[in-house]
Length: 187
Image 1 (cartoon, rainbow, N blue to C red):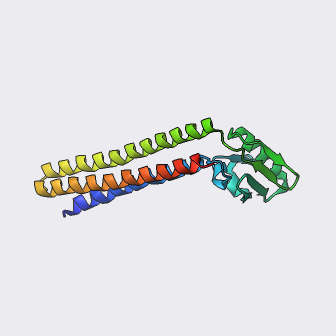
Image 2: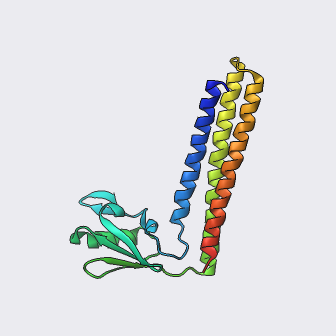
């Protein structure tokens, strides 16, 4: 295959990988009723005037499926961490015992589970849009190359290869969402 087409295929695959990676991160933020340190990834703590990720100022563990324990590296960070968790509006009520913070993860209601499934499907659709966008950009660039003298049969083969790659990534996104959906709906 033409070098330019190979480059376009790699670029398209990279774009599709990014879309899948984004979907993975977004799905990990959706809580399925089990405690998970990633639930607190979006929490930023005021660390001496600088917004800092919670994981960079403390250890975060899950001793059991219903609880997250945060142990700050500095005792004076207990208050700011507690405030940051409350401000993040995640639906958690942190409990400060003077040495560490416990976050009890409440069980999900049936209605909340359905909402989370809907949200996961929306994230999957966004991911698929990103995958299709990478495909479209690659095909458009290939058509420009065809006008510049790349043989038509090579461009047609490239288009079918890109479509096959697109189908694989869309199937991967679907599988990820199915797994998350099963996880969310499991009580």
